[in-house]
Length: 103
Image (tube, rainbow, N blue to C red; front, side, top):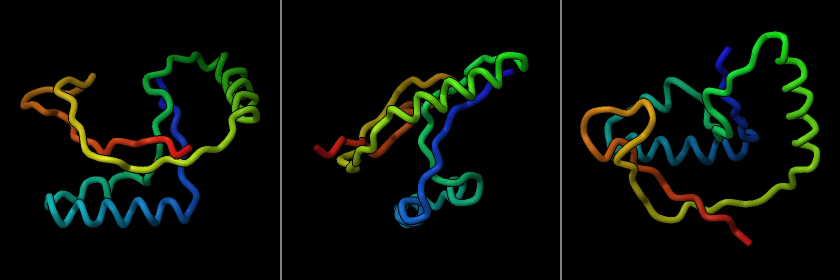
């Protein structure tokens, strides 16, 4: 099976991201991100795991999380991607708010 590994945000951070999405929706007219998914960070995509391996993979990820410390990000500027797996057609395919780690 193919899985995505995502991290959903705490309620306060989700509200802050939703506020940004709402403002962007006003600029672009698009409501897809408001209607189709909750704010999250994609850590891995198209991870291939058999059903037999799934429990072990979940346990190993749990162990990895124990040694992962928190950090802060700031959205700083806007950039774009002209190619993205799964993207097709016009470029740029993706524009995004560039995250910057706060030290």
